[in-house]
Length: 392
Length: 101
Image 1 (cartoon, rainbow over the protein chains, first blue to last red):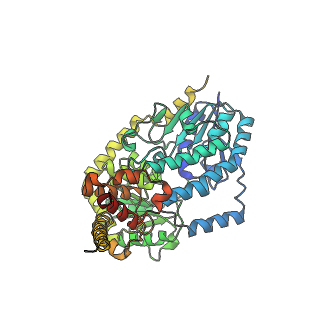
Image 2: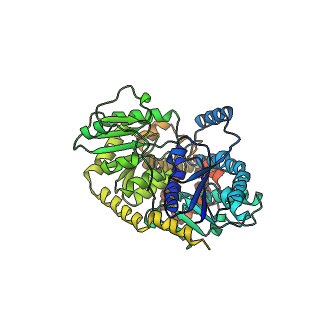
Image 3: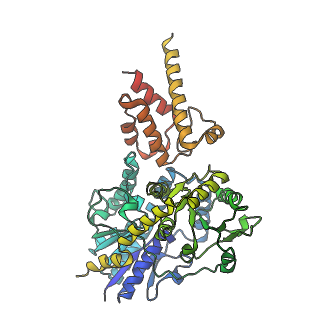
């Protein structure tokens, strides 16, 4: 039996794939732990036998939490500027806060391999300093991809990380990812697009196994819709600003009179009326729902896009910030969907885009091609296999 | 004609051309609502994201060809510069490439 540890940020999209890989490693008889700050629902999601090593983020007392929330709500975190905000206000300070505690846990637990989320590079720094083999886990593949015409964006991103590493005693002029034994990327090369990444980058495809369904759902109403097309509308769990309300009003306007069943992930209180062809819930059992859907409308978050395409479901993407523009671009490039603008699209455009995809089977066919490329990556078995390869 | 007046006119033509490109990318109805001026900033006022800026650069390249090396100029731009890139900066760059030797 070996010991593995995952170092993850408190973001669902980043944690979820590690839960599946960890579940596989647990099943093969290993001791697997997650280093993370406290997060609602994390305990319940953990695969059986897994344990949490809890980090104590000093900023997460109530006052600081409210302060951060205020800042997030007042800041226009959209577009390219969100990248700067993400690194300067969130990722870099967070890694710095966590570094010592991560190192403490690694010394104490003495894992054979550290698997660090690529945004929790403090995990790589700690592992390197302690001479423990380390593997990167990339849930946001656009963070390893340069836009050809705007290379400075990616360079800037890398420089933030390299500066952090050097400040903490790592002698390299490149990211520690380049020194990792493997970099696990949860997508396919087909979806990622052309690249010249080195051999230790492994495109294993999305991993979704062993996520117990935690969310109740009105299946009765859902199935009562019968044969009409059914779609899911989700713009993720990260955003909580007022534009959301405008977004959902447009969704309501677009579909309230259509013969389409619409499942919306949102606070139902944002809606004055809930038409009979709508189900609105704060959380939904997304993986259980997908097999019944014909289309997904989303913010182009990597996980929702991957999960939809894993089921061969085409998408309407409406990217908001961070790397979502690039993910949306991949969807368009592979012909698996259509892209709209978050602040600008009109309900009419959304309705047209949905009908275009529902009436034209080429989108679903292309989504199927992406699905097949995902399967070829080997998924959770391949990911667990690479990690186990590092055992002496 | 006065040299200054001449340069104003050339810049005005470039401005119109760029406005046309932006319209093709983000849609005429949006452009009407936005009230774009020379001071407008691509990322903030026009809410253009990285992919749209790339599309914009491509249109400039096709229009002006090798006389204006817009592609290198923008690909050498640092994050901060890109975030604050304004209409007037692009107009000046194109104007200088075309007329100022």
